[in-house]
Structure formats: C-alpha cells, structure tokens
Image (cartoon, rainbow, N blue to C red; front, side):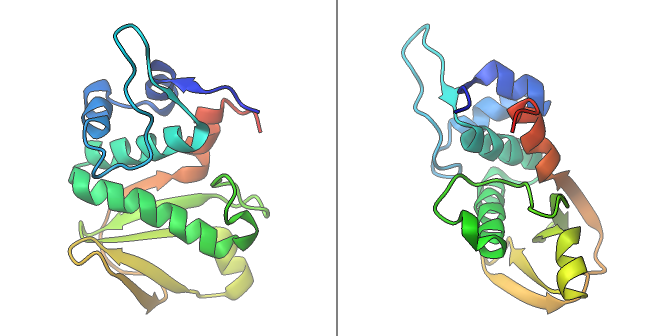
Length: 168
C-alpha cells in the first residue's frame, strides 16, 4: 500500500502553483472527494487518486479553464478510463493502460474536452471520440479527430507516475 501524500509533495511532484491548488481545495463543490482540512498544525494527506484529481484540476485551472469546468474534466477523465478498462471499475482509478500506451486529456478550442490513449487507435482504428462539452456539460460522440485548436494537453499517465514517485 502506498503512503499518503502531503500537500507539499503533491504540489512539488506535479509542479502545481500552490495558491491555485489551495483555491481548488477551498471549493469542494467543484472538486469532490478531497480530504478534509485538518486542525492547525495538522496537514491534509492525499491518496494517489486524490492527488491526481487535485493535480488535473489545478493544471486545468492554471491553463485558464474555470474551476467549475476543471472539476467536470476530472470527473470525465475518470469516467472515460473506467469505460475503457472495465476490469478497473470499482477499484482504484489508474491512468496506466495494460498495453502501456499513455492517457491524455485535451481541452479543444476552450469548450470541448476529450480523454484518449493511442492504444485505442491500435485496437479500433479511427475510434468514435467522446467529447465533454463544457458549456452544456453533455458528452457528445464524433467520428475521428477534432480539427479544433488544442488549448491544453495533459499526459495523465505521466502525471500519475510523478505523483506515485515511479513506485507501481
């Protein structure tokens, strides 16, 4: 079992802006599942999944995505990998694929988000992509790659690796 991570370790390993991460933690209505703040002198400790959730949300916010949308992106990321890797459903969320391809999240043209892995292309050719529409909160399906401008891209597998300190 992996040790829990202190806030300072999460910030350092994921290269987060401290004030942006603290801001996200102050809004549990957008970023759910975070540990409660401790008493004076007692620091929050995060599981790996909580640390990854905080890191994704903070990176999105640092890139200009509003916090309320960043929280939706975190939930969408977890939903997509659970759908693609049903053997993990109900267990700890992980962005490691069995075929070792890496997961990424992209915010396209500031309004659409997709979560994908190159491994999907290997198995299904040109897949039907599920996009989260940040304005409506609905998931839409389109065939092939979007031609829109990529505003933010984040390698989820690498982020999880950094937070786990390469100990799988």
